[in-house]
Length: 227
Ligand SMILES: Nc1ncnc2c1ncn2[C@@H]1O[C@H](COP(=O)(O)OP(=O)(O)OP(=O)(O)O)[C@@H](O)[C@H]1O
Ligand SMILES: [Mg+2]
Image (tube, rainbow, N blue to C red; front, top):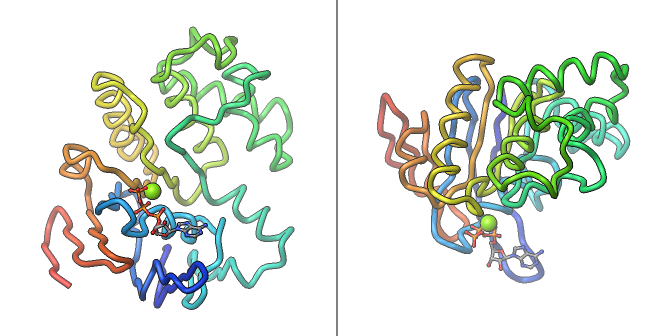
């Protein structure tokens, strides 16, 4: 489904991604791990079409998103890619339910349908009682679960998460991690998660190890491929 090949990226004279090939398995949870500065966030941004590679290609099935014009790329991203960041980035003036529905509303889904989908995800993530609250009235764990619901509301091909549990305490972290695997099993959702959390990486279907702008190894549950 999603593949990257020959990805390079430089900032000025600093080459931070130095030739990366990878593919993301459908209905799998993939972790990207590695030391600070390895290029994990940069690679995730390219995979998410938020940043262009200097060289190389990203493909979503038959689609080369970087070949699209800006408006078409924005539409493609809205309907195919969900994002979860370290800090939830919910909009403070909207309720939890409105925040979750937002990408569907932006994508032109009718209000009733957008809120129906949002309500279903909010219930699935155990946030029903909190649906009418604004982010300022929610705990960090609740906000992060809402951010996951928001990422899924357009039934994207993939959810990309950058240190999603990095700001949570251990109980909320464990709960969020359980939710990723639950959503994989119940919805067939696909996740790529940048994480420093070894226990999360250990549970993932595939772990991509990065160092100095390169993929150094990929281990999967069934096979170990040393690159
Ligand atoms: N916009 C930018 N301009 C210049 N350099 C950048 C930019 N973004 C990232 N870098 C550099 O690229 C390298 C990789 O950064 P990146 O954020 O991808 O690392 P990371 O693996 O996500 O690290 P961390 O675990 O600390 O989040 C770093 O040396 C960083 O300083
Ligand atoms: Mg990072």
